[in-house]
Amino acid sequence: TSVVIYALFNLKKLFALYEKGIVFTSKNVQCFQHIGIALIVLILANLIHGALLSVVLTFNNPAGERMLSLTFGSEDMSTLIMGAMIILVSWVMNEAATLEQEQIHTV
Image 1: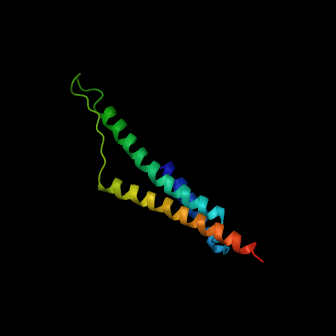
Image 2: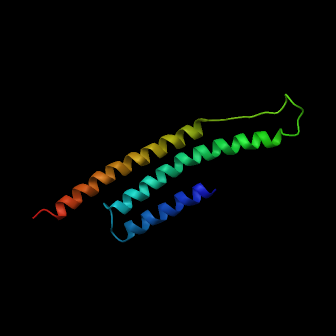
Image 3: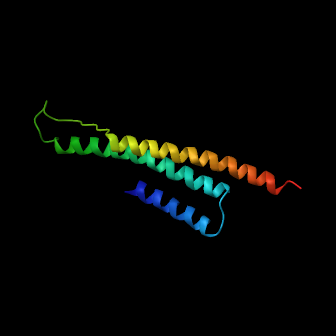
C-alpha cells in the first residue's frame, strides 16, 4: 500500500506542476521516474507479499506439506510494461527539458 501511496503522491506533485504551467523541467522528469519506479517496485512487493502469505498460511502444516508459492501473472506483466514505458517517457521528458533550457539560453 505504501508503494501505491508513494506513486499517487508523485502523481499529485506532477499535476501540481502542470497546474502552474511547468511542463519541461527536471521536477517533472523526477516525478515521472519516481512513478515508473514505484510501479516496478509494486510488482516486487506483490511478489514478496504473495510468497510470505503462502509461507504463513502453510506454516502449521506438517513437514513436507509447507509451501512457498511465487506468482507472476498477466496483470503483473502489464504493470511492469507500464512502469517501463513511464520511465521511457521520463527519459523523453528529460531530453525535452534539456532542449528547452538550451532554447532559453540561446540569444
